[in-house]
Length: 159
Image 1: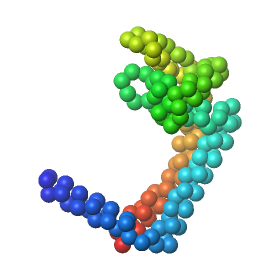
Image 2 (image 1 turned 30 degrees about the horizontal axis):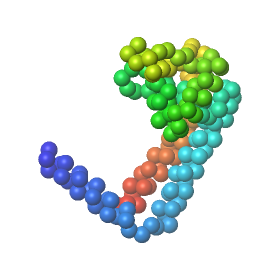
Image 3 (image 1 turned 120 degrees about the horizontal axis):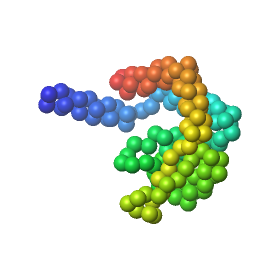
């Protein structure tokens, strides 16, 4: 077990050293294709959100609230961290989502300064519809292409 861990660490270090070497044309091509696949998926996801009457950021916030993993429900601060925005921007976003009837707020019983967030039934339905579309698109187009690209990154670092 110890030998396997040492061998694995050695492989990681060796791989890290190789990444410091000169980039090849195939590396640039793989990175360009990878970024294209990501941007294509994001464009698809943004269009799907618009069809549901949501902005991409609103969609991300709903996903962040529903997918939050932590002790207790998500808070405004958690949404801000998830979206990489300032707290006051997250407050404004949550205000808009609440006005749309997609999110409800509840006071934290242990700390009244904290607000717990929960998707409403309407919010759950919108998020579920969007998530299904996104997963279908990932399975249909992005997943096979991304798998090939990720594999090519590993191959080019081993050479």
